[in-house]
Image (cartoon, rainbow, N blue to C red; front, side, top):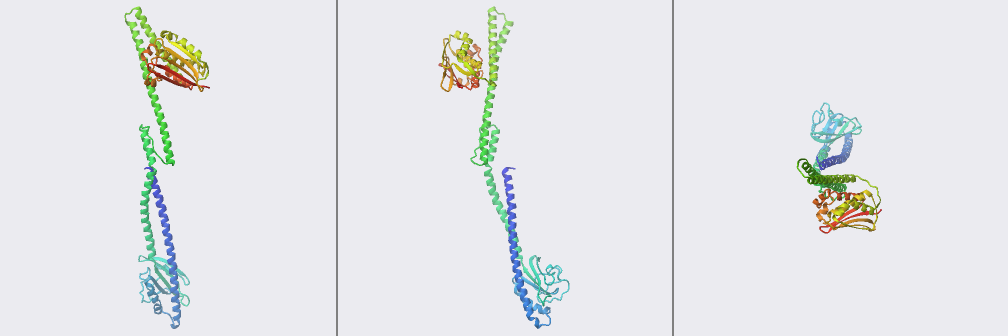
Length: 487
């Protein structure tokens, strides 16, 4: 079951219980007030009728030696005839013997219903089934009973002396009160149904509107789960749902960023593996081929030496590649300690290491060292300079030029190496830091390059919190610049 459906059911159930309870209490209270008014009016009318009857009987009692049933009926019947049209009926008992009754229904427990002109000579217990008659002299009873499907109010009392044996019964039709209660209850049920229907429509509309952002969040979450990581939910409300939607979007941004980063790492690692497999296959194939040549072929001494030189050369390539890979692996989890490094000493060591390549190409190296000391790791700085200068020498034609500069711009110590070699295009610059990527593959292989130097240099700069930039144009040379923060 949906959340809005649960909220609707709970709301409508609570409303119906509360509405019906309040309505029932209001109807009950209204009925009770009307009933009290009718009882008070009936009691007042009974007192008036009974007092009037008493005074009339008292005034004529001197004319009769004894008031018999005929005399009593003669004086009571005018009251009955007068009030009958008002649905008020009367009964008179002498002792327990009925004398007069104009009540239209046969009473339960009575031997018969007395007509208006009958005298109470009947025998039998006329009080059987008549609780309103079961009173003693000086007492009064008020009883509400249903007779013949109609509600009546019975008020019974004795007349005063010298007529204390006369029992007067006042009967009032109060069916209208019962009908009023039933109508009010039926009306309340109809109102409850109508209001519940209208309220249901309004509640459903409001719940659907209020839960619309939640449904949007749900749909967006499903789309993101299906791989559409760029999807976001648009919720403009400023309540808790709007705050939740904002946090959801922030979470989605974070997930998308991590997914993109993982995807890039996966692609980079896959390229690394593919390039490594490709780079390893070439020297291994060459070594195996020349080894089989030395084993099986008839060759001269000069051809044998040449084959051995190729095997040694390819072995050195594999050694350099393994060394660079180990350096990259070591630097990925490295923590360095900074010290004051003599830049001039590092450059001199690198020149001695690359002297053979420099002399072979007759490269001219110029230096302008305005900053002679940099805070860093000496071994890593030497590895950085060696890779950068070695790449510059490889890119140069015979007689090329390499320019090494250090200077201070106030906030940073900058180290730059420029050459006037073949340069690179913008597409090549975008890939230059990828492991195994080489601009001129044939030239790199000829010098034993593995395409790992610049990737290693970038990692060294990251460990020094330095910024590394490369600018280049095809045919105009390349400039490598590293900016070290001053301590």
